Image 1 (cartoon, helix red, strand yellow):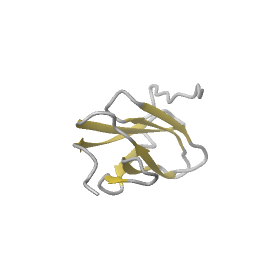
Image 2 (image 1 turned 90 degrees about the horizontal axis):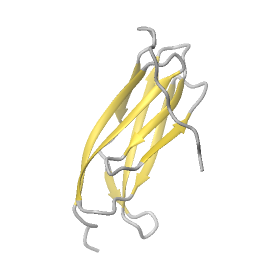
Image 3 (image 1 turned 45 degrees about the horizontal axis):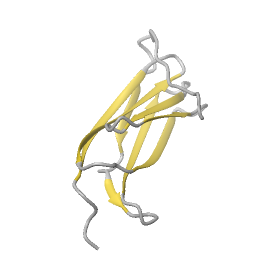
Amino acid sequence: MNSFTCLGGDPPPTAPVHVWFDSTPEMADPSNVWVYIFNVDARTSYGHSITCMHWDFGDGSTLDIPWSAQSYVSELRYHQYAQVGTYNVAVTAYNEVGNSGTAQVSVTWNSPPPP
């Protein structure tokens, strides 16, 4: 079990963090299990580093991914939803001085596409 968590604080106003989805989330079947593929990027100011990305998949599932020594990161994640519905997915990236940025997207899980 991973005990790592992303933490924020009272950051200085410098070193902003920008987060964006690099493409529209897509459904895929990489191993006979339908999932959504999310691709997100984060950037902070030169001389600073992204330290963590916090994923909230909108269905109660969350994931914290540690990063270090990079001012720009790209993250690809797969997620499977258990129930039909619309889900609001949010990704928050943090840098070493406590600044954060968030990107959000909604996906609707109806059912896997027909074969």
